[in-house]
Image 1 (cartoon, rainbow, N blue to C red):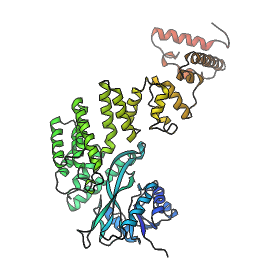
Image 2 (tube, one colour; image 1 turned 90 degrees about the horizontal axis):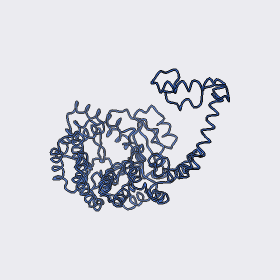
Image 3 (tube, rainbow, N blue to C red; image 1 turned 90 degrees about the vertical axis):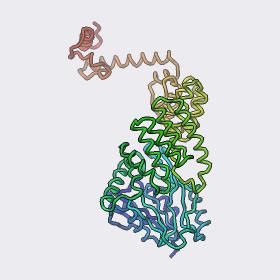
Image 4 (cartoon, rainbow, N blue to C red; image 1 turned 60 degrees about the vertical axis):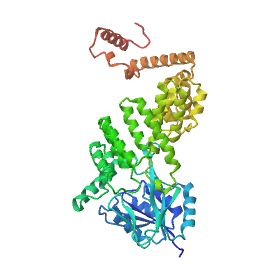
Length: 503
C-alpha cells in the first residue's frame, strides 16, 4: 500500500455547490481526501463519494473546532490540507506548495505553513475584497489541534513550543469565496447565534467583541458594530491577523452613522497611535471627509493612505506584517475619488491615469468604469476601444460595457454590440455608425411596414401590434383633456375605416 503523505480534510454541511471544485483541487495535491459531513440535506455526500473522498459523519454541536479535530483524527498523512469547501489553491500555485513541502518536510521546527488568504466575491465578478495570512497546511501531530467553537485557531501544546513555528510562504495563495454577497449575511447570522449561545453558557471570551463586530457590520447594524469594535480594539488580546480590523470597523461604523467629525477623528487618532503604518485608517477617514463634502481634506487623507499602502506592500513578506490587507478592496474607490477630484480641477489626463490604475485592480468597479468612459466621450472610437482592451475582454465583457457606454460613444457601442452577438435593426446600426441619412431611410421603411401591419390587423379584428406603443391617453374608452379627446376620436375613426379607405 503506497505511503500517505498528504491528507486533505474538510467539514461540510450542504456544500454541493463548492465540493466539486474542492475535490478537483485536493485530488491534485493530496494522497487521500476526507469529507466530514455534519448533516447535509443536499447532494454533498454523494458528490464527495463520487469524487473519490472517504466520507465520515459528525453530529453537529455548534463547535467548529470539535468538528475539525474529528476530521484530523480520521487522517493518515504526515501533512494536512485543511482548506474549507469554499477555499482552493489555483493550479499555477501547486508547484509552490510542492517546493515548500520538499524544503521543510525534514525541518522538525516547522509545524506548518502560513500563506496568503484572499477573499473574493464571486457574485461581483470575483472582486477582491481583502486578504490576510492564514494557516491551512500543517503537520499531523497529536499536540496540534483547533480551539474555539467559532473562528477556531490552531494551538500547539507539545514540547519545544518556543522553538517551533509556522513558516510563511508568501507566494502561496489560498482563495476564499465564502464571503460572497449571496452567502455572507447567512454566515454572519449563524456565527452571531453561535457566539451569543456560547456566551450564555460560558460567559464572554476575550475575542468575542471582535467577532461580533464583524457580524453586526455585515448585518448593517452599525450601532452595535461601533460598540463591539471599540471594545475589541482596546483589548490586550487580539486575534492573529485581525489586530487592525477592529479599529477599521469602529471608524467606518461611526462614519456610516453620521457621527460628528470630531468623534470620527478621535477614533482615527487612537487607531493610528496603536498602528501608525496601517493605510486603512486615513483612507476610511478620507471616505468620511468626502461624504461630508470636505474634498480637499479627503484628497489629502486618501493620498496619505496610498503612500502608506506602498510602504505596507514593501514589507508584506515580513512575517510581522501578516495583518489584514483591507486596502486591496478599497484601492479602486480611493483612486476613483482622486480621479474625480482631478477631473473637477480640469486635470483629465491625471484622472484617466488614476482610473486606469484602479481598473487594473478591479475592472468591474462600476463607478470608475463610468467615469473613465465619460472622460473618453470625445475620443476617437478606435482609441477608446484600444484603451478598454487593456482591461476588458472584448467578448466576455461586452455586455458589461454596453450597460455603461454613454450615447456619445455610439460607434464604440456598435462595436461591443457586435462582439456580444446582439442583433440590431438596420436603422439602429446606421444610427450608431453615424450614418444618419441611411438611418432615417431605414426608419421610414420600418414605420411604413408597421403601419401596413397595423391596418391589416385592424381590418381582421385582431389586436393592433402598435397598440402597446401608444400612451394610455390614446385609449378611445378613457376620458381626458380636450386634446386627448380629439386624439381619441381620431384613433377611433381610424379603427372604423375599411381596409385601404382614407377619410
